[in-house]
Image 1 (cartoon, rainbow, N blue to C red):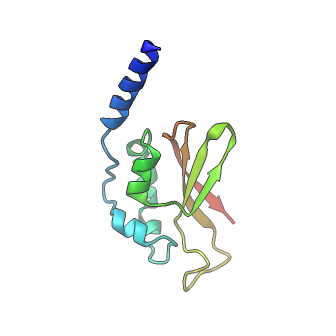
Image 2 (spheres, rainbow, N blue to C red):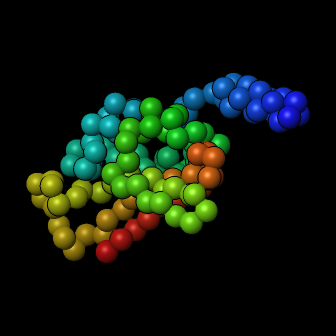
Amino acid sequence: MRNLLILICVGTMLFSCQGGIDLKGFDSASWKGDRHGCEAYRSSIYKDIVEQREQVLGKTIREVNGYFGNPNITELARKDQKYYLYQVTKDSTCQGFDSDTKQIYLRLRFSAVGIVNEVTLDIKN
């Protein structure tokens, strides 16, 4: 029991000491304000996010929500994994939306303990 308590304390200290997400060239307010991709900010920056994925890997759900805002889509998977999908390209609510255009999402996968362990792009027709 004592070892478990020590492990929990050490784990809490490690996670609380992590630095926040800091992506070069990224403006969190602009990202959050372009929720449906209508302003084209997300489509202009998503490649930079993927290139700097190391800054996002290992971060908690709370840190991700604070930096990127709430996802457009949340998917639950096996073994308590969770996926956040952020719309990158214009969706059907935007003026000038083209239904033939592929939809691109920034996809973050979280482990069962709520830590980002994958940053990819999801392209849907």
